[in-house]
Amino acid sequence: RAFVSRLRAEDAAVVPHELPADARALAELAEGLPLRLVALDDEAPADGAGGGGDGFYCALLERWLPRPLPRVMLLRGEVSRGYGRGSAQLGVPTANLREQDFAGELAHVPTGVYAGWAVIEGAAGRAGEVVHRAVVNVGYSPTFAGAENAQKIVEAHLLPGGPSGRENGGGALFAPASFYGAQMRLLLCAFVRPEHKFESFPLLLAAIHKDVDEAARVLSEDELAPFARDPFLLMGLAPDGTVGLRAGRGSGASGPVRALFKTVDFALARSAAAMQKSTP
Image (cartoon, rainbow, N blue to C red; front, side, top):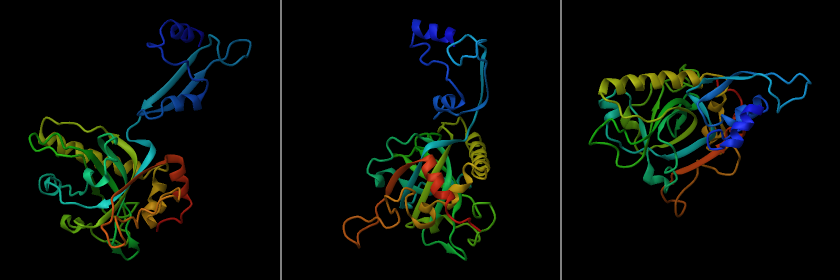
């Protein structure tokens, strides 16, 4: 620690941080990065005093993608007709939300692939509206040279079955055309990878299938699986109770339904989801 402190004193631009005092501090330093702590060996000085000494210090972190988002994103909007590439060219149909419908609120959302949960309102099965696992691209589709999206688009591919992958009252997944004009609720809780411009169509297709597998895997893990029971997905309510995203409308009760966007602290959202009854 003393050695690192001396280096930082000499040039804080090169060594911007002291060594974290404990595992919690190290996790906070790595927050927002695709890293998670595996082990921390912080050998205290011989006199038993903690911190500030020259004892052995070793932190082992591993690259972790997909990674949970510090703040989950809640979106609700009308599914629009896209470019038809997802279904026709890729065999991966998507339900699309347009950036222009969100009044600039998507401008600061990093482009890339996300994992989360989705509900198509009004598409009720035997158990009511089905909560689907979803792999979602937010961006411009740069691989399609000369035909990139003119604006940032949220493209959600809904995986068949309910939260566990089993059919959950919904039967087969919708045909692409049945998405159009419906309201979709999306909860994005993990970042899979940045958006890339691939050199060839087969490379893009391989990456998409990998994204689907990664999203399905991470959404089944204990940290993210509870979000399938989030109040926003089940009832259209934000986890903190401040916004009812299901009923939002424009001017007047009969006006068009507004697209809405909100972010909520990960821990708060997960706690709210965990309080709901388990999904069958």
